[in-house]
Image (cartoon, rainbow, N blue to C red; front, side):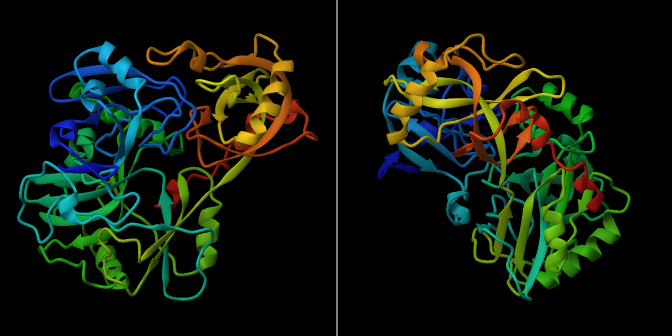
Length: 463
């Protein structure tokens, strides 16, 4: 696999074996296991910036893991030191300057099939893995007018499922093998009477009436025994929304969406009825139904609108739009961290009062304008007051962070701000939040966890 960083070709040996074997929630003091063919290293991170749930860029960290689901990484000037044999080398590489961002998948642009790297053996189907899935362009509102088919945007892992006889291959959005992480789905797909097909869908894990993204992240683990245990404790479901190859081995990718949908519904009626692990995603032509989905509670990440007249747009964003939920919350500032090399505030630690009364740490925001940092720092330092959070508190020093960057300063819980976020799971914001404005008129005690708890309507009822 040849990659380019800032215009420079990176040797395949630098990246061929990189993968994250476990992805934790992207939080300060995150722990994950970076594994390669030759060695395993346990890495603790701390920082105040991030990209998304499957690719993470920290403000004071110069390398980022990649995984079977990931498509980008930031390499230091010594990539081999980062994933080399010694912890000392890793600490040294942490201080080095990044070369740039490497895009290895299709999150930021359309990707041809030859640009994906998989490890899939040849199969006797019209399309072969790795096959770039159809992508979506992010927009702010639902499109009006006819010509669209609307679908729920499920909060899970995108997946293409290939079946050729007894062989089943699961492919991630970035063209990586997923089969070993979801053995129960491979078994369920093998049990279908149809002996060959290619399905496009989303892997989700139902839990407590909703869908758990944290459970999905736990599956990316190097130990097969651990994956098998989790697959039995919290079995996954594959929600299907497109049929690319039918049971006769015929490719449908050149058919318009409405024709593929008809074929998919026929396929589902014939083969899904006795298999609870494989479900058909609903579809609607009425935008009012899509709006109702958009405001549903647990399990949906938004709504997708697809052009009904277009063939499957492999690796392209021309035929599909996604409208993601963006929510806001009023939080208490209960602490802060300094920038790595400056006596100015780097991130604000956010708190919400739980149902029992204590103030829990729920995340952070680092989207502070540079010109505002001096004034905010001065204000926060005047409010310094231990111990800080009375409930769940932030993590302390991590192995790879400096003492200054990891330590947090507690303050009196008197400041309230409004932040924008997309997901709140596991008692915290899944990603970094966006600082919107101060809320001086809001009483800190009014900032409770109830405001981020979703309406209790599970999207699983749509299936």
